[in-house]
Amino acid sequence: MKILNFLNVSNPSNLEADSGYIFQKLLMEEIANSVSWDFYFICPKNTPLYHKKIKKIEIIEPSNKFKVRFNFEWNKIVDTILDIVNDIDLVLVNQPEQSSNMYALINSISEKYVPIITYFHYLPVIPNNIQYHNFNNTLKETFRFDNTLNRRGLGKVILQRNSEAITVSKCSITCSNFSKKVIEKILLSEINLKHECLVIPPPVTTKLTGDLRKKHIHQSKQKILYNHRLYDEYGTEKIISFLKHFYSKVNKEFVLIVTDPTYGRSSERNRLDDNVTRFRKMLSETPFVEFVHCKTQREYFELIKDCDLGLGPMKPSAAWSMAVMDMMACGKPVLCPNYAAFPEMVSNQELLYSSEEEFSRKLNYFVGKKYENNISEFCRKQAQKFSIENCAEKFIALFKSST
Image (cartoon, rainbow, N blue to C red):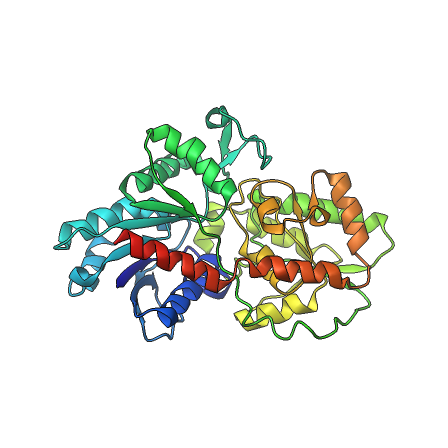
C-alpha cells in the first residue's frame, strides 16, 4: 500500500516541538517497520525524516495558522505527485480544512478512486458545557469559537471547512471520546450526515524516556514543568496569575520550567496573535520562572526526567495533549483540569482538579513532597496504554479496511 500523508503545520521553525509532526513521524516509522507500505509525506522544507520508506514532498511553506488552513498549493502538489498519483491508495489529511482540497485534487488526476481519511487533532470550538460526563442535546447551541482561530469571525469559516472534511472523508479520526462527542454534536448535527468517527489517541514513545527504574534524585527546589504553547486559550495567563499567588502564600521553593514550543515563531504569527509575546514578557518578569528551549526530542525528554511535576493547560477545548502524556510516560504526575479530554488521559482523581481551591490544595500536596513511586508507576502504566505500537496497529487496521 502507498499512502499520501498531508501534514501542514504552522510552526516549521520548531518542528521538534510540534505535536502534529512528532505524531506523524512516529506513526509512519512504526507502520513502515511493521508492514511493507510506503508513505509520501507532504511537509515543510527541511523536515527531518530518515526512514527509507518515507518519501518527502517538501512543498508546503506555512507562515501562520490561517495560511495552513486556507492556502493550497494545487499546482505544486500536482507537479510533485503526477508520476506517482496512480500508485497512491489512500490519503491521510492532518489538517481538516484541507481535506476537501485534497479530495478534489487527488480524485481529479488519479485513474482510480482514492479515499480520504481526516484526522481531527484540534477543534475550533469550545463547548460551554465542558464537563466530560455532562453532554446533552443542546450542546449544538452552547459552544463558542476558540479565540486563537476566531480573528474577525474566521472561526465560523474554519468550522465550515471542518464540516466539508467530514463530507469528503471515508471516515474521520480524532484524539478522544471528548472530541468525538463534540464532532458528533456540533459538526455532524449541522450537516445531518451519518459518518464514522473513530478515536485513536496520539502515540506515546518510550524510546527516549531512558531508564526510568533509576532512583529519582530529590532536588533542593522542586521543578514544575509547563510544556505547552503560550496561547490565551491554553489558560496561560490564568496559570501564571495563580502560581504567582500560590508562590507568595506557601513556604515551599519551586521553579517553573517553561519550554515555549512556539520558540522561533515568525513576526507574521506574532502580528496575528501578540498574546505569546505578552505572556513571554510576563513570565520573564516572574522570579520563579526559567525558560528552557529544547532543540531536540532527546533534550526535551531529558528535561522532563529532571522535573518533578507537570501542569496541564487550562484548555477547555483540549482534544488531547501529547505534552501531558510525555510527562506521564516518564513517570511524572501532571495536574490537569477536570474537563475536556483530561479525565480520559490522566484517569486518576489525585491528578484532576475542578476548582482553584482544589488546584491549590493538590499543588501544595505535590510541591516539596518526596518522590512517590506509586503515583509514578501509575503514570507510566497509563501512558503505556497509548503506546506507538498500539496506535500504529489501529491505523493499520483502518487503512486496510478503507482501501
